[in-house]
Length: 193
Image (cartoon, rainbow, N blue to C red; front, side, top):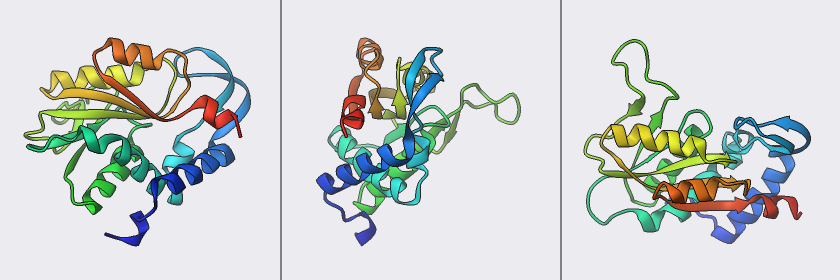
């Protein structure tokens, strides 16, 4: 395995938390994608697309996912574009470096109006189940929209996994939809530094 991915989980968590605080967390007056007003904003893409952050993202999400991967058959990772895209790619690469096949596929917000007209992009032939990922969530709406799309394609979502849970209802909505819920960090961890 490459030394690039040979970082103990505790070290990866500490480094990611510092990176989130340094480049992704901002206080002020914001309107979130959910329409809610907030006194802080977490731009998770600033870490998931960061050169070092991408490595840490893959490591930390793989740590959350690996026990969900079935012993038999292909397993997937998906989520709603754009917040999920770098998480999906980084996690699939770390899984591959660790000797596992994790099939990445990407969920558009709407089906394309041209070409094959797909909402899901990527190779997911034979994938029976998957996890859904997102950088941050308030209501869980992105995870639930992706869940509906993968279910329509015949893939069963088993969990919604976030980099940061804003702790404003996403957990409850995701669990109510019958999915397991996991978050690498809570907003409280981010704000306590």
